[in-house]
Each structure stands twice: as structure tokens, then as C-alpha cells.
Amino acid sequence: MTVQIKEPFNEQYTLIIDSDMQAVDMHVTTTTQMRWDFTVVKVTDHSLEIRLILLDHILLETNNPMVKEVAQVSQVFSRMYNELHVTIDKKGMISQIHNLDVIQQKWEQTKKELLKSVEHSPDIKGIIQINDELFATPDKIKQAIQANEFFTTYFSYVYGRELPYEEKGIVKPNFFNSANVQWNMSITSVDSQLIHLEIKPSFLLSSGFYNKAYSQFAEKIDISKLFTQMKETGKYQIESGSGRLTEAIIHRKEEAATNLYTKVSYHFMSEEKYKEKLKNLSQKYTEKIKAEQDPVPTQNIKEVYKEVNGKKYTKEQWEEFEREQWEIYAKKHNISGFDDKNQKNLPSGRFLADD
Image 1 (cartoon, helix red, strand yellow):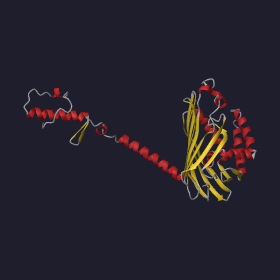
Image 2 (cartoon, rainbow, N blue to C red):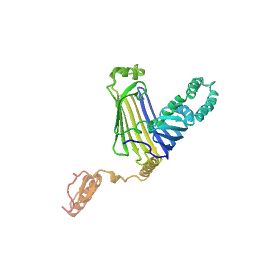
Image 3 (cartoon, one colour):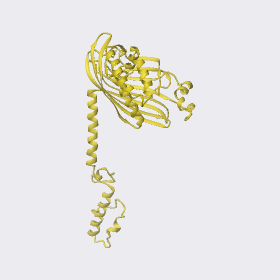
Image 4 (cartoon, rainbow, N blue to C red):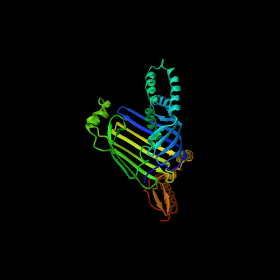
């Protein structure tokens, strides 16, 4: 079975990225949301002509104010790529950019705005220079687009490959992006619609990897005692008729120690799946509010202490029942000296009034 898009379609997609990173004494968590309008314009035997419009790119949550500043800068530069018209092969690799002139013009407009800030922010001058070189070179623009979150999530692995698929010795960085690693990749299909992905290191990680990957933390932790576990897993739901991706869930984890790790989860959804998620969240929120407004009666959640003749009693209910039974018994048998105060300490389960 080869996974491939078989016919033109239009779909809106949402990607939610949850990131949790502990870098010894710094802990950063973020939740980011991106939305696109994706159109497959034309399908041939070897390629796809597509249009991709970025609808939204927002930082939903973070525990670190610095991340907000970085996100604002990223959103400025994402503007250059918010309209894409490209041709890709069956694996999702870009072969031609049809609106290259539009992308370059957007950079010129953005650069003019940035130049106004150079006097107050000298660092911007370096950023402008780097991007000037990038946007003057079509191949570098192609590489930048290929690294777009949409392409890395949608097309990175499963499309254009005969399944089951295995590849060994893939060289790419670790998830801290600090050292290269050789990886083995395995892609299997549960059926024509559900595909599983697993990527893990090809070999035991060497001391050279540890020294390079975590050298920036060498003054704070003993690198020789680290034991890193790394893995990427994914689950892809494919529409069998069109080959359209309806949902993907990807997890990446690199954990060297309890205080040195990075964990990232990607949840990529079609509009139908996204609305379903929103509906479930809304339902859970409604149930939570209702539970707060109408709490479960106390007697319904107390532990059953005793059951007699099919009736269940809590400890308090049973002791009250016993006192009533003792009072009935004492009066019936004309027992003198009955003192309710003294009967409160009677042993549990003493007798019933009909004894």
C-alpha cells in the first residue's frame, strides 16, 4: 500500500503544539495553535499543485514571558509565507514555487518596517541582513518553506512510501537540536486508514554525543551520568478514498535526566476533527460547571457502613438507627434508667427492636 493524495480537495486544518522543556534550572511550557486553508489544485502521476493559506498563528499559553517576545518576532516573519502556491512531489518535497515574487515582495515591505526600528534595536540590523540573503536565493526560500510546520507534520513521513516501510541510519538532529543522531524509522499500517510511525536511535548513544549535545549544561550537571531516552511516535488517520489526512498525533521525547528533557506533542486535525474536539471541550466544561452548581448529595458519596434487609446505611445513619431501636426496645420492656446520652456509645449491630 502506498499512501498518496489521489484527487483535488479543499480542507481547513488546525495544529496544536504542546511543548514542555526542562533545561536544568529553567522550565518552559508553551501551547501554540496554527490554522491553514489547504487546497490541492491539481493531481498528476508524479506531483501535486497546492495552495496553502495561513489563517492563524497564536501563542495560547506559556509560563515564560520571553517566549511571548520570540513568538511576536516569529509571527512577523511568518507573514512572508502566509500565502503559498507550490508544486510538490508525492512525498511532499517542494519542486517549484509559483508565487516566489509575492514572497520576495512581502520581505521588502517587512524590511522597510524593520529598518524604522534599527535605531532603537541594533540587533534587528543583523536579522535584516540574514533574511536579505535568504530571500534573494530561491533555494533557501524553498528550504524555509519545507521547514514550515504544515509540511513537517503533513508530509514528513507517510506519503509516497510503500508500506510497511523501514529506513535505517537517517542522520538528523536530536530534539534539543544540539547534535546529530542516526535514527531508524518504521512505518506500519493497521489498515488502509490508520498508520503508525516509530523513530528511535539506531545505536546506543556515544560519549561523544553526550559531550556535544549537553555541553551547555556541563557546569550544572555531570554529563557522564546522563542516560538519554529518545523516541518519536506518530499515528496518522487517512481518508481511504481521497488520501486526505484527517488527523495526526505525534509525540517527540528526549529525556536525559529528570531535570533535563524536552517533550513535544503535535495534534493535527481536519476541520471536522477540530470541531469535534471543541465540542468535547465544551461538553466537559459544561459538565464541570453543572457539577459545581449541583454537587452530589453528601449521603450519596459516603461509604456504605452496613446493609440490613437490602437497605444501605452510612456509619452515622446506622448509629442513629440503633439508638431508635434501643429506645423502642427499652420502652417496650419497661427498662428503667434509659438514658439516650449513654446509648450513643452502644456497640454497633447490638440488636433490632424485634429481638
